[in-house]
Length: 102
Image 1 (cartoon, helix red, strand yellow):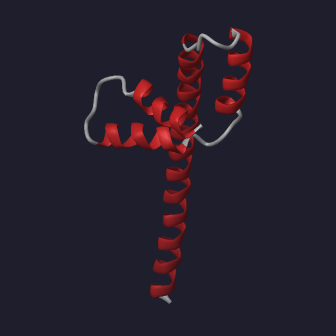
Image 2 (cartoon, rainbow, N blue to C red):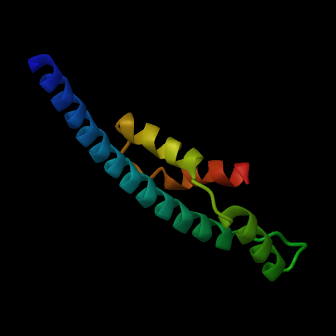
């Protein structure tokens, strides 16, 4: 009987821990995705090839790059950099990975 109660308590505790970790991860992913989308917009505004009109270029690039997505590639770059103790702004480099992918 005592083993069963301990097991049930352990399961409840693990569920609480998992829920807490899920919330932290979700918040982190949402915050990073927002930062990445802002940086992508900023990066795309500065790019402009010479042979097409600015409007055509802007519309096509914004559509293909900002269409949506989870942004897991740049988030992974940022997470690994932070885990390794990185302190500088890695956001432009992380967004480059997303631009190459798009």
